[in-house]
Length: 480
Ligand code: 5AD
Ligand code: SF4
Image 1 (cartoon, rainbow, N blue to C red):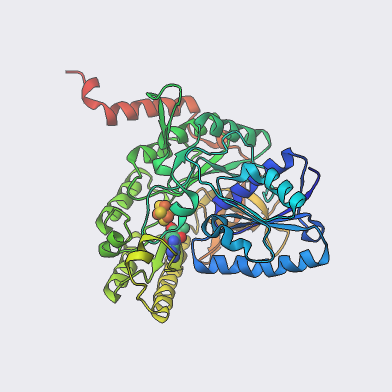
Image 2 (image 1 turned 30 degrees about the vertical axis):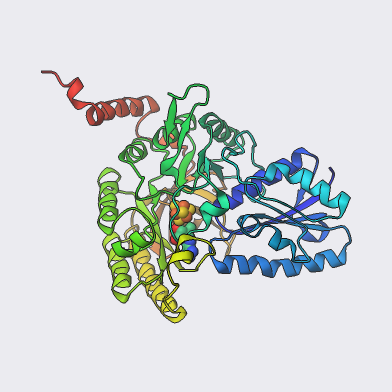
């Protein structure tokens, strides 16, 4: 199948990774992935349904793809991902779209493309699967900086937050075989990657059971440890955590390994327990604050970022003020902030009126953004004068004499290149900042994580064993 494939991706990092899986499946059958749409035989758009405006953006792009089809005969257009899953045949009514393929059906891409090209017919493939994890497919990092990559460790979500479309578009939760995750991380190391982000809708509920021996299971903290030990010179990140499921074990593992970055993305959604209950989040404001306290106790330098929804159904001014006050209590280092967007067929859409006016939603969102900007600035100002390990990702947009990268806490940092190149680990002293960026100068060059780590891996292992003995089974080991 010698076709040129152009892929455009919208939405979350999971979608970015799914596009890489789709690219891998198609290159295996002889296709080439191209970056220039004007010579494509097949145009694929991987889509997001999480908010209405994400869907509108994709519909706008379809108009442009229509022009490509007019220019060259034989070009076909496929919609992948969450919109394909949600709208199925409905999307085929759009003249531009030739096929739709849901998130669990990418293995059928070659067959679907062949069918559309041969038969000239439209088709939709949107069966959700109970066990598809694309475990053995090595994604093709089409859009990568060669330094940092994503690995999907699980798919789907079992949480059914009342506002969220994801459980409907991505199906039931399933965990990927840890051996294939570790193998993929090791592959990335051998290709020169220096950072990996383990991805899942709810990583804390990662739980793999060996199909050949159901008594053998691996949970998320064990998986983190496996990857940390397998790739000691690789920085490890993960997202997204869920406040109801995050366990101390994960925090201890983070604290123990210098290559696991001290950053947790812990979406709170609202600061009002009443709203949280209505959202079906299964924790209260107090539970959330308790979790934050525990994180800070175990990992004092941990950055905490969050997601917040403004104007969920029946949200009062008092509820909104509680969100603002929680933000001030936690002092988030960063946040993604959204206006509530009703999604068809979710529990909220069926049961709660979308009764906060657009005007009030916007006003509350703006207040949340304004407060977060101040908190982000304050968080960055605390970094001034400190030196951070920064993984160099590439030149800055403004000047190629400057490089950019991220601190372990995931703060974006700009500094004079001083001979550093993408993939180097440098130590940057922070001199100034804005709410979005740290600016500093390199004070130390090119150390690997292991060279810099205060402890050798063997020391770390010893520490872990001691910690586990002290925390999990203190009585057993105490001498009388
Ligand atoms: N409206 C607004 N924001 C939403 N999110 C999920 N569903 C909706 C919705 N219907 C946000 C949540 C989630 C993030 C990925 O997107 O904050 O954590
Ligand atoms: Fe959606 Fe909640 Fe699952 Fe996140 S945890 S994907 S918000 S249902």
